[in-house]
Image 1 (cartoon, rainbow, N blue to C red):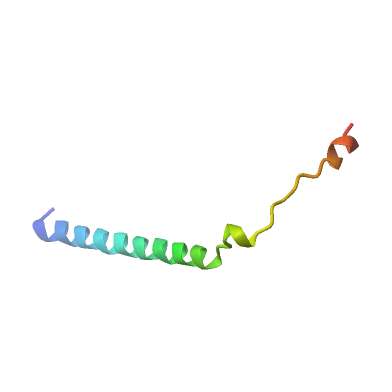
Image 2: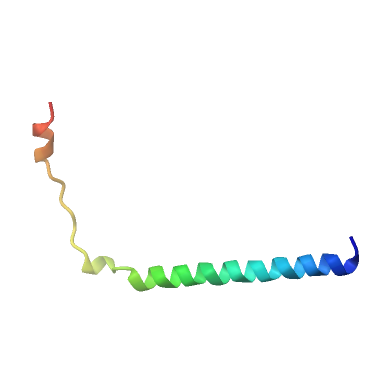
Length: 55
């Protein structure tokens, strides 16, 4: 493998890494935009009735 080939592979890997990082950031940004703050949620209370119905 010549020096040019190594640089081409290295450059290709750099591009792929940058694309992966950009995709990861887009997903994180979407998740943050859809996140509901804890203060805006209601606490779920357990339903104990299901235990009596089990046999």
